[in-house]
Length: 421
Image 1 (tube, one colour):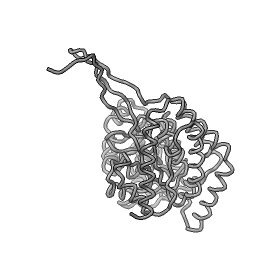
Image 2 (cartoon, one colour; image 1 turned 180 degrees about the vertical axis):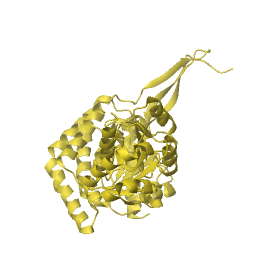
Image 3 (cartoon, helix red, strand yellow; image 1 turned 135 degrees about the vertical axis):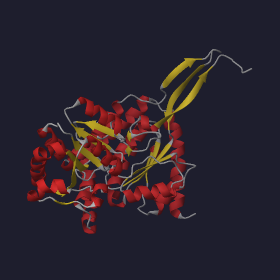
Image 4 (cartoon, one colour; image 1 turned 45 degrees about the vertical axis):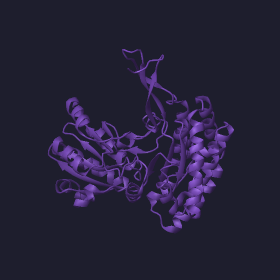
């Protein structure tokens, strides 16, 4: 066994032991750890930014894109956001131990289900160091131990954050090994983690399509994942024009390098002349490249629109690029979403209640919205405190993965000496 495999096995063993301790920890103890983590992040803001600058410098030298560098950057606001996310998780009700559905049987037995932790979670992620804090907070609150493997481009930032989180656990007299960061950037650590089915109960990847495809192909452990975020904003035939402009701009440009950014705009033909010119002007002023179907190009070529290719409809840009298509009906819009979407997040802009309800029922995505920006598809915005990621799976959790998504249910039976005849 090589050194990387030995180290990963050691981490897995420690995580399994820590998971047993966390599973029986009180809500008060877990909240104390989370509150200490929150205080530690704020108190160490300057230290975190100094470590983050090492990663940014290395990233610039390697030629990372502006979108990647943006994901990597720890501003004051983002460190504050990490802390607020942990504090919000601490304020949530502890799901562990909840008993639901207790019902009496004719023989007097009481049968129901109890919510319990999954056990040990392995999370593999790229770029964004805030994932380190989010994953730790959700894991601790839900009674799970977590092994974190961040990208090499964020190694200094992740190490600094993980050290603060471990101190928070220790202050609450919980095991430091409940949150462990893989220290080596060696890619062999990922393969080792994916093979440790005796120590790890679920893998959650957060990163590019290539990373997630690799994990799906190699993992010996169940995976909660989404491959990509090809999110759509559909402007219906009677949409409010000002709202359509606002939601398109926010969905695409508020932050481009994230999985819930709008990548394709669909516009009902009846709204094309009314909506497309002001939307195009707004996007142009914001610096967005517009890749257009022929009908869209008729309206937006003077504003810099360029022809779309077939590949554009299947592309997650993660950049200031938006593909735009005019559709003849809502049915055509939903057909496009089904054919080209990634079942992540799709929204309709409309004033018609019946069509809004039909869109909600028929679009098969993990989050479906009415008159709201796709950027709201997020655990923090959904009141989950933070999220472990977005799941486009159907089993066992879908959408932003919060506390309940990191637990499972087991049957419990309460008897008074009954035997089966």
